[in-house]
Image 1 (cartoon, rainbow, N blue to C red):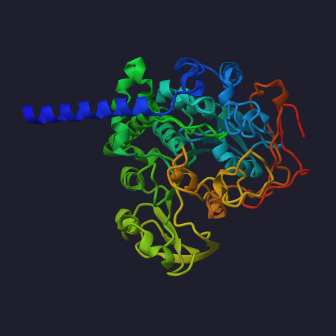
Image 2: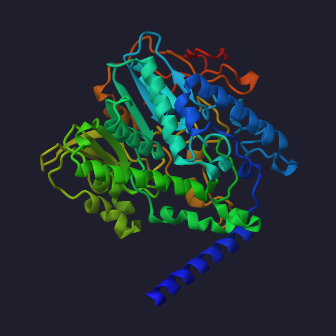
Image 3: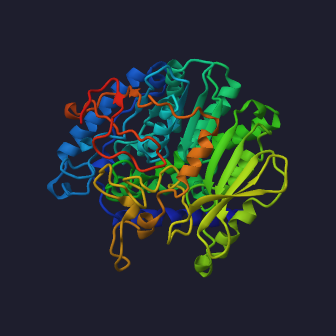
Length: 526
């Protein structure tokens, strides 16, 4: 035992030493790595309402502009720094700053309400296409900016996941105010937002004071993450000493994405693990007590290959635990076209059969896969609840050339998304088309990992995803341009910005000159 303890202590000492050494050699911290705006406290969120949350959010964005954008040194005033006022990726200059919370309301009485919860390091931008989809079907939409997001990466270095869950509760309260019971209430969660949606539903099953959702839509949900996140706090230990402050960061990168952090603090990983750990323990406890039957039906979309979250945990840690309640899991398999075959790792090829072998299940399992070898065309293989045989139907969709799989970040974005789309349509301009960068050159030249830039960031099966989400929704409404209530923008010149609607978000959006939907507490700017 003494030898074992000694070896563990030695390994820990070496690990911390390596972290300290690498932090000294890493890039310098910039203003956005050191300035964190002050968010509302847990009690303030729980006791507040939407208006108070938006007021606080406006002050937060004002403070970021004052303490970061207006104080940038000359060397940081470069075109692709999102915090530089003159940058084409500065979100304050867009028609809509999607880092901010927003509400959308149909022009007629809402038939229901939906809460949208974005992911870790992300922003409300990530679910904007689903927001349009629900609005067109008569739903009131509440898309909240999760605390510590959309501002500076430093905000994630000192946040607790309890604030994220409190913001979820506030968003649900607002959704229920817009569409009171018994109107349906759905919660859509992407990545870390999926964890929050599921945690809220579990809490609501134990606390009748919390409105329960009628359905959960989970996209790449963070039900289980890598074991490293559990010990991520140890990676930041050297940061206790000021000389090793950079050890508090897992990555320090330029911030060129207008709606997502590129840099990632250790605490972000730590809090996501704490959330998923609490989630798994609560699922296990309620399953043992036979109390999971009160959960609403869950529809989950997940890529078989996912570097960020555990696909296996979604099955073993969630779907294998819940009773038969109409839930469904949709898996997007790799592109098994023959020309990719020799390039795949064996573990990638076998991943689907390992995690989802043929068997009778208490939920519906749908797998999007190749029609056959040598073709990029796709089909859906569906095994209904309680059955062992599958039925097949062609989708009329295909994997784009050169795409060997989807990814964790790809699922909520259509191919024509202006920022992340593989085939951006140009109807909107966010300063860069990150999903379609034509990168070629020598290895080792970029400060950003090449794999991060070539990662698949849009979904060729997005129209299929929308169709599956819409199966239990009303058809599109002819007057569903809607209006919206969101917080006034921090910049007076940006106040009242509007977003362009789409007749069908699975199709290219309308060009300039089309109608706008109005956000009710903002002025219109064309």
